[in-house]
Length: 269
Ligand code: KIV
Image 1 (cartoon, protein in one colour):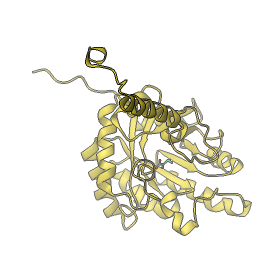
Image 2 (tube, rainbow, N blue to C red):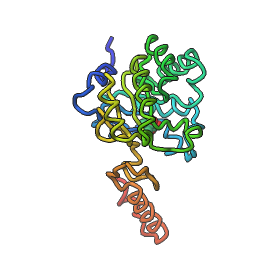
Image 3 (cartoon, rainbow, N blue to C red):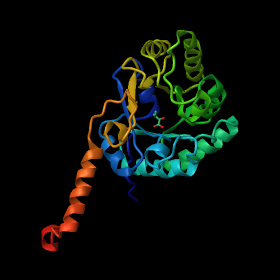
């Protein structure tokens, strides 16, 4: 009986082994078609809960349900062959206890076939990270600006502007690393702090608005493609998809209205 050829994706240990080596390339992706393109260039793809804001028009990531993450996670896994796929655990699915976190992380992994989960929080999540990793669930941590806590933080603010606060972030990084996280996202963090943490911890740091001093970078795909009306200041916009889509849609609308829309024999091949 023939079996399907196994898909060989980048593994969690391969990402962990990149500490201090070749920079790790990553992007978010939420659909099969964009993920298939990103897959050719990224070491890992994050199905971020930013999809709540980017794709579903929510004001924050707090309202993102677990089932939505699973639906998009499945699409990204289906669309990809190479990259490690990491799926975000949404707000309210892991903070209550390590056991609740395990149940929900296992559901994400079983239903999407992703390779790892990501959760937000430093020292306060260390016990949970240990509980998950000891039970076979690889965890990427996320510290600094943690959007799920934006209500407590008072908005989306760059962390570490005041050097007196650095100790908390350094302790967070150390705690998640000691607990078994295989990498840490550093979001919205001043460069010298991100550089210091990157030197201190033995696992790769993945920056987003945290400078080129990190071991790798991640951006929200729609931000760097120029699809969102507003993007954070630190994002370099590499594409102009928003205007390109608008040009195409308005040309189509004009052709329909002017009756210059191509006839059947011009379009169907
Ligand atoms: O949800 C997301 O897209 C993220 C990235 C910003 C790291 O967590």
